[in-house]
Image 1 (spheres, rainbow over the protein chains, first blue to last red):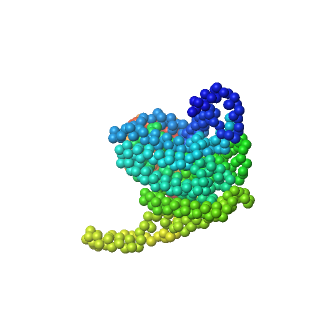
Image 2: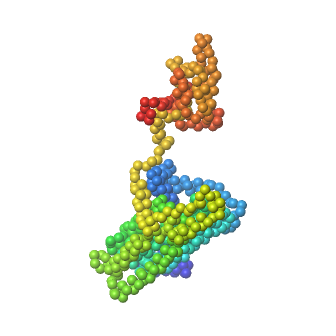
Image 3: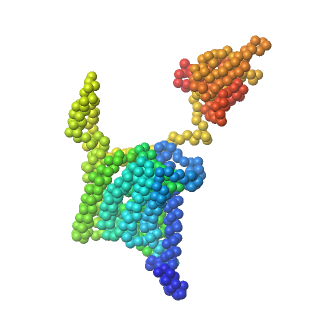
Length: 440
Length: 165
């Protein structure tokens, strides 16, 4: 098809010149060129950003622990990622004798590639009116955006599981198993939480979701509980603390990447950080208005100038960086969950909450639409629909966090024993023949 | 006595993960914003040593540049680690001096007894901690090396000032 269009353009340049309209999306050759340009830029920014995130992680952990962090390589340690990358490339790759080689080599790639390509559908700025038409600012402006992300992000677990299995090491295998269990459990609540966003916007395209938030207000308020579930689930999805069961340094050495060295290990690391970037971008897009500038409407309407593009890009990145910071902040604050706590949180709390939340949100949206509550901005720049849903969510949040969160959300070690159990344990220990024979 | 399972009753109803998490995050944020970091910029900024710091030894010399040591033999006698080797000699005027004076700094436990016992205030433990050698033999300091050290010496424990202030 592309060749045919190229041929048409080559044979009839007039078609090409009369094409110019700043509000019609670019097609044909300019589309191809812009897409390639966007791919290169997004890929570069993502890779450099991931490298910088490793430095940011070390710096933030240092500051939180009253240290200074890396400051020897370059100004303030800025060249540390470059030095680390160089080291990882130069290092010897070790291959364990017992490893199953094809999968051992394939696993880092399987973990690395999905983490990079998920970012493709995220709209990161306002569209830009170029000379040849409107350029949407996401690498691939696919209409099934969110479904694509759900599909691709769940592929990442294969890399981890295969790495754990093919290493032929008990710790790696345990890490891989834990990871698959964890990701499967939390993917469900993540998808369920996102359903509430889809209900509100009535569309799975990320551009449409951003547009809905521009006209109505950010989703974080009317879907507060949904955001909470999504946020927790995305921490679990990216294997970050307090959910870093697959790595679990103290128990599993390094979990699934115990046997990996040099650039293969580095690939798992890059995958983890770019997963973080994608999950943060997703949270920004679904709940924090994407590239929307808060409190204004001028950024949502044409003409799509360069200034608008840069400003919205800046706002998107600011929000993204906030979530990346949140990831690190939480990592250096919370200890890791016990495995049973993780599973019971996922299945006994998050999933029922998410399911109930879909029903409540769906019902509320249905009722509000039946009452013909306007969705667009009405009084003082606030949409009534948005405000009513928000108040409902505040009530739910109080219910969840004040009444339900009484040692039930995360079961503490001591809460698992009822008085009945304690009595039974005491009876057992009293009746034990060894203990009885010891006497005193 | 039989083993009892000790189970404490704790206020589960008051335990809240979310509140505990938020207070923890507030604490870490406070530490992150705290400009007073604990890191010592070691090779650039050296650690201020206590005046009572006991490090590798130094032999003091008199005005003529000779070691003050009179080879009385008290320091090898008191040394708990047995790391001082002393062979006394005597010159024509009958003054004793050390023919061989060696301290094995690897054996030394830096108790400082040699400095306390020395009647001539010759041998001292030093306020110094950066030592590295390519061999264990390099840590056997002979008299020449001990007199060549220039670092400040330890100010010993003073009963009138037990905290060293």
